[in-house]
Length: 185
Image (cartoon, rainbow, N blue to C red):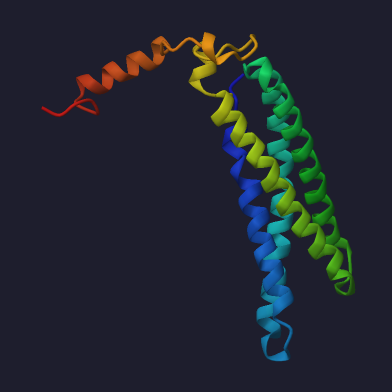
């Protein structure tokens, strides 16, 4: 099965941070002259929080599938477990934030605002672990798929195969034949 998790990972991060921005704008504009603007900020924040919850559920689901199907070095397991735990917490917070928007009164807006903040912080923090999995261990990249990083071993960098996989070598030759990349004459 194709790993589709990378297609979704940026949506919960960007949506949750943008939702928090509009939540702050909603809280800042308090005067009667700005009531229509304030209401607009509240509506945009609410829509973004609901979209964040949907995106977080999809992303967490694809992440759980990827975690059990994508080749990875054994040494990455503790980082994967931390990433998974944080993002599951972020997904649950996003669902609670969406429910608080849909079912709480304005007088409880501080609960909603705290949930929106907690969602943004948790999802963003968890995403940093996902980035480390890709950039430190090559998870989901041609490095692991092509055998340059041992997907079953200890992750010992001294024994890493530094020969690019054939698929990458063929791409490089195709680029050179078409005059893309390489040295200019």
